[in-house]
Each structure stands twice: as structure tokens, then as C-alpha cells.
Length: 264
Image: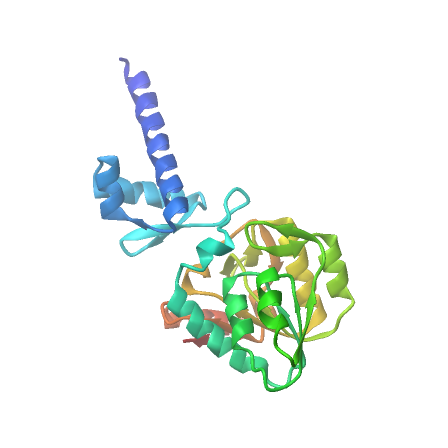
């Protein structure tokens, strides 16, 4: 085999290995360098190089000893998957976010598991009107006697069990909302808040326009991740609520943009 042919074969082998790494990351939600190296029969250094390349391509994010997949137009986790990831952190974030309700009487609750937990943590001792695209959130709040639930109409996305498309955005545009609790697939200082699906982005963007106050809630792994559709800048939020695995130095960088950053 010529040197050129050998080089092409090695490149093809590397691409196949990296493809398998991405598939594994998306199936499991995270990767351990030692485990994936043993599974693929290569050195840990080879896996680290592969992960660095995949991170530059925007497919994974490196962590100490591993990586996790970045959500994109071609890959998005389901609500069922999200309920099993970072459960303790999300519960703390939701409780802290719910405490920011203040005197709000009308509240938008975004789709996603952390916003769903925020809805569950809202007080039930006073009247509230909750607007949401999430079927799970609507169902969870509907039995509360002092909560009026407005479910946005539109097409239901099976993976997230939430409504999207222009029907949902149009309905939102008719409200003036005291407080919006929003999530995202990624948040970065350079690109703002992003999500893979343009239709989801449309609903989130309208929620930003319709609300007087805005709170972002998300675990540390959301920070620095960038998806396809930008719907807001970090500076547009009153408060960002995350967990203590986001370094203090990084939290300070976000706070310099304007929002208060709570690490819980």
C-alpha cells in the first residue's frame, strides 16, 4: 500500500472512530475517556485528541476526564432523557428560581425539565396565571385551585411534549407577562442563548418580547455550549440561576453583562 493510500485509510479509520464516539455520547449522555478508549481499543491520548477535534467541530464539550454531547439541529435530547440527568442540581436550581417570583401574577414557563421543576416549586397560596408550551407543566399545575393555566396552541413536539410553530408564538404575542422562566440548549457570552430548532426559538423569542422580567435557569453544562438558533442575549435577563459546578470566575464574567448570577 502506498503512503497516500495508507494515509487515506488512517484518516477514514479516525473518522469512523470519532463517529462512534459521537454516537456513544448521544446515546449515554456523557463519555469517560478511559472507558471509551478500552471500548475502541485505542489509547486514552488518541481519544483525547479525538475529543478535542470533535469539540472544535461543535459536537461535544470536553470535561475533566471525558465529554458530553452538544445538542444540534441533528441531535436533541428528549424530555424523558433530561429527567435522568443532573437531577439534584436541577432540583436546587428550580427551588432557587421559584423564589424569584416576587409579586408576579402572570408567569411564562418554558418547555424542558428544569422549567417543569420550577413550576412544581411555585407557591400555591395565591392566585397565579401560568402560560406554558409544556404539556407536562400544564398537566402538573391544572389541579391547583389558585392557578390558571393557559396552554399555548400549536404542533406538539413528541420528544419534548411541548407546542411550537406560529400558533404558539402568535398567542404569546397577545400577552404582557410579569415574569418568564426560560431555558436553553446552550448559553455563551459570545452567542447568547441558543436552541437547535427554529420553531422552538420562535416561541422563546416571543416569550422574551412579551415579558417584563426574565430568568434563565440551567445546569453548568449549558454554559459555553452553542446550538443553531439564537433567541436572546445573556444581558437581557434579570437573573441567571445555575449550579456550583459553574466556576465562580465564569459566573462573574456573565454577571458583568448585567444579570445577577446565582450558583446553588
